[in-house]
Image (cartoon, rainbow, N blue to C red):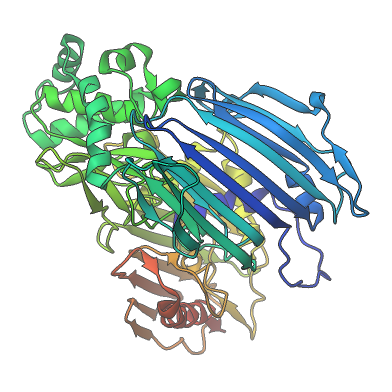
Length: 623
């Protein structure tokens, strides 16, 4: 999964936990005692949002997390006023936030990140915070320019991993304004208006307990109570609104035509042309997020992107669309969520749902994401695969919801061939060659690209230690930015004192230093006996062949029996074959999912497969 790389990186820097640490029951860091949100919407879709939130701090983490609250806003589109902020101590004393403790600065998103925006952050620093104290924050936001002209949307999620005693959302709007609503898990609806010609809606949430987070599951937004209101009648209308402003930016200019012709000189096949143009945009246009005024939804024009040689996802899509059009190849933008948010609401709210744009080429029936930088043509990053997305133009001039490809065992593969030799002292020396495709190719490129040159051996040693082995190693790989060829990488490793020869004894088949997405790592998220929430889990095929050469004076008494496991979600087979002092171990795992998400009732059956495979991976060679 796409969590493999972050998990590895986190593991490299993680400290060892105390051996005597005891498991504790889940306790939410804070309790939302009340959250009262009032929207007042005008006929032109401008609005104000008045919110008062009272939070009790339950843990040290809460004191650190909520002792200061950052409030981000776009200066070109909205205003933000802190009406009131104070701490209530455990003994009931109120201490107001001093004016000089409401600090405003340019958005911290620009610091250390490739981003330019017109956002500012007001950080409210609460005094005298400690466990048991509460903080109260009253703010007023004024949206004086809608992001989509004439269109209003609100999105309020109430995270079910937080304890919420009371929450309320109230909406006042002109009676003439047609609104579409989705409020699962909330009580309420339309109520009598306070003023003539006004519609008023009111929803509440009471006494929501906190559910412990489940690592590896979908985002909490997928299953939390929420209120979503929009003036968009359909996602097709959202697509039209996006296309109306984005399409003119992808015009084929003389500069675009010249570049497209130069890049595709001597190439006549449309697919090869498209791949060449995609590879150029992926590797030559640096990703820089730009959010100035309407920059969050409106791309720059193709010529500007070419001149600057950088842009965000919308700019990537726009430039690629223009280059493709210069060669007569059709394409259209596709809006998707790039995080762990997999579900779409029942109404067409664009904001808080979609945060990323990719490309669809209808004649090739192929999706591409040039922003990923390291994804080969036709390969989507793992965090996009299988998601519902909005194609802004389905060929008829209208948008529609589509499901992105989720991959298959044929398209998402890792093949690992390992040769290792044990000497008379039980020391292991070995090499592995790893061939990847699809998601695994993208993951491996991303990991190697994240390393400073020369750190490969340190990372190799760390991974060997994390897999319960003792030794050293190194990685060798080609140019991760060369998208014309699949990535093949090689490893070498040494594991001193792995076996005690001449025996008798037993050893597991050494893992050594093999692929990042090997069989052993496939089921890392399957330790819990059950789950309450869905979990992303993609189809794949992983094949590992290990050839072990033993010393002349060591003989395996009995080879393990071959294993064949058949599950509704895939198959696993292993075999052990001896030829003199050489033993060849073959393990082949195929995961075939019908959906990108494993539901809680499916998890139990899939976990059976995980446990059976894990058991076989621990099989020992007795000598």
